[in-house]
Length: 119
Image (cartoon, rainbow, N blue to C red; front, side):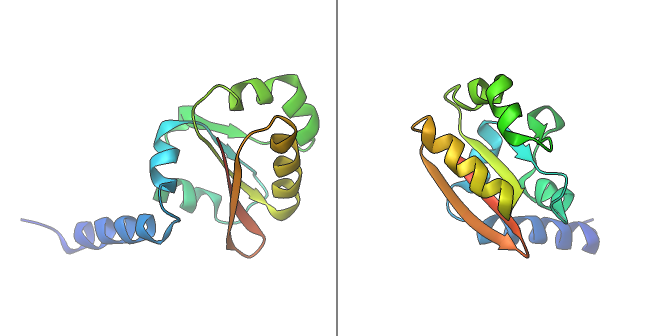
């Protein structure tokens, strides 16, 4: 017997994935996901993308220092990377990735929250 709650939950996850830009959910499955703790509802987004804990990398207050002390190498490793960040970190991350000649795309997900795809 199928529970109503299970059907609703599966439908919500499926609908949430469809509402994301094309390929975004698949990218989250493939690589790292950088998470800004300042983003409201970050856990809800991560659950929607079905991101494993091993894929999550918390973004520190000083993103530039974190980038230059090893995050750059992890991002440039070849697998696609997503970042769920506030607007200010999206701007910084975009600039840092462009310095490394990485392809960057970004989408606004809500109030002050952005998804940045690096590849």
